Amino acid sequence: MKANDFKQGLKTKYIGQNIVYVEEVDSTNNLAKKSEAKHGTVFIADRQTKGKGRLGREWVSENDGLWMSVCLTENIPSSNVSSITLICGIAVCRALNRLCNINTMIKWPNDIVINGKKLTGILVEAVTEAGSVTKVVAGIGINVSADNFPGELKAKATSLLIETGNTYKREDVARAVFEELEHYYNRFIHGGMEDILREYESLCANIGKQIAIIKGEEEINGFARGISENGGLVVEINGELTEICSGEVSVRGIYGYV
Ligand code: BTN
Image 1 (cartoon, rainbow, N blue to C red):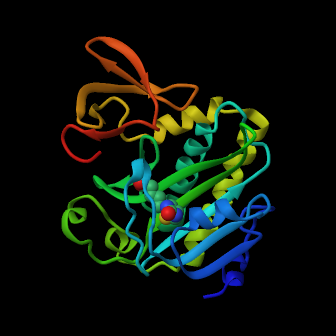
Image 2: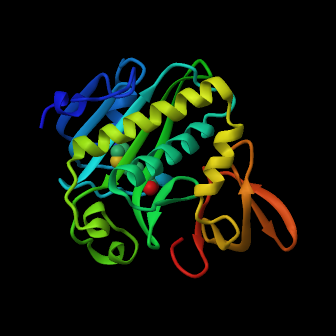
């Protein structure tokens, strides 16, 4: 596979127009953060030796997935980088549904889930200089052709192959994500977050459900009620609405992973 294979027929102006493709790296997010790459450049690896997940977790990255990081350096919102997290969630969800004719949803903040299992993880990291954000790296890990998962992942993780019975080319999956991500990023630049938020809510699997909010050893039960303007999850706990931020907590369904 070559960098150019990802660009065949690509209909974007900036996302994916520059591709850095490597066979192996510790983490594509680390590579992207260290680079001087321009807006829209995507770093893709066959394998990651230290793939990173949210909240310091490991992200297992063998040869069977699409592991990539998109560099965004223009029009970054100064006060609310977490809106980019939501944009990535919608874009990946829409891309997979369109390409594979499936019905994935988002588990706040940005796991892409289907049939109660996780298909994709997204880790957005900000690079700051002199106190302001100069670059956002959106790391996206999509399980493409894994036919099973080890240990406790078996109950929680799934792949495009498992869900559809089809082996998708990573290039095709990547192109679909680039196109949707550019569409939603442009919409966000021109129109702000308002209508994107409503669309996010409509794709969000946990809204209206009873959830457990987990912060370290602490676990609180509540009902997910909506998404705030800051991209936080609005939760009803003991009859009171409160907003929780994605940086601190993980959320799971009371009756299963979602
Ligand atoms: C999560 O669900 O916890 C987020 C997982 C993010 C994984 C992707 S794979 C490409 C990029 N590089 C990394 O090290 N992590 C992200």
